[in-house]
Length: 430
Image (cartoon, rainbow, N blue to C red; front, side, top):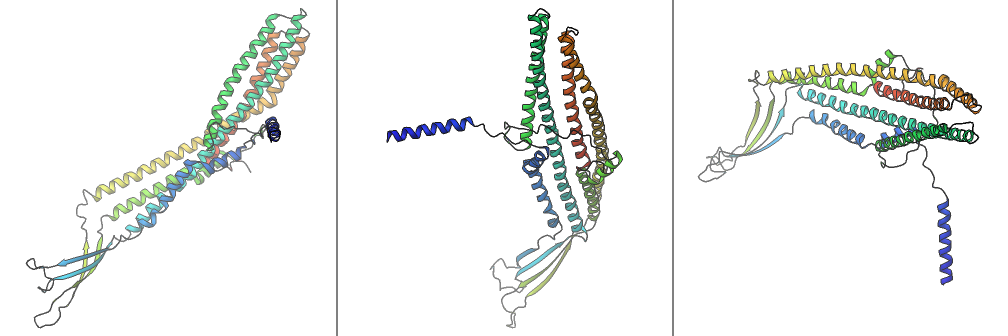
């Protein structure tokens, strides 16, 4: 029995060691589209706005429905000396029903106001979806840039180590200077410091992205190593602005609020007219008439209306208030349109600048800088180039490579801002 247990324990240990030797499967790279879809599907902020929109969508029908009728039960003309219901002929038990009737058109206006507010809330949901997608894209591209910057740091560290080896070899044979070795080691230390700063920035951006995706904050985030680095052509600026006027949810929501304000003005004008109440009642009498016959029941019809006679201090003031609210919404809509046009213009300008920089770095500056480094390295090995100039050329190439990835990331972030400003993803030239 003990031999069997020992064998089992050994097998278990062997299996544990084997499983430990197998590396854990790395997380799948998180693509940009996947990140946006995941954020839109799991955001608690979106869920809260959606619940608010559903709540407001249930209001219009309520506001367009008549108030509940009122049921009344009365004891009329009861003698206080006997409290008898049959002693006096005018004593009766009355049951009635009445219905309030707002002036014609008021209910329809109330329903229309509530419907416009519900539409605005639904459009607010669309605006939040655009903003969330924009934020996810911005953080994703920041992470992509930081990953490429860290790759560039690693490759430059490798090259500088090679420079150190070359400098040490030349120093050992008496053809180089010790200061060359020290200079290369100093640049390596600077790269390490930059790497630590980039890694800290990446951790912060990963936390931001995980938060937007409703994931654990410290979870691993891996992005694809390569993306399409092309420069897509965009629609004309005027066309983008016109599409924003038709598609941007925030603009359409503000238009709905303006329409609600106009309807409130009409509703305030209706308050100059009275509301009504109609009803009917049936009075039951007990006892007998003097001739011995049963007493006849009574029937009543009821009509009442309010008298808006204090219009100078109530209706007039209410109408002034609603007109001021309408003007406020008009100015707010105009200001928002100007702001949206500014967002589109700035995003387009930033995209053109950063994309042109990226093309310049990739097609011109970086190839030239790479050739310069290769030429200087060959010259240094035969003592025709100063080591300081060689190191400077390599650091310059590193800076250009980093700036290229930064410019590419900024161009894609500008596209994310442009899509959010226009209100749709289809911003590209056909």
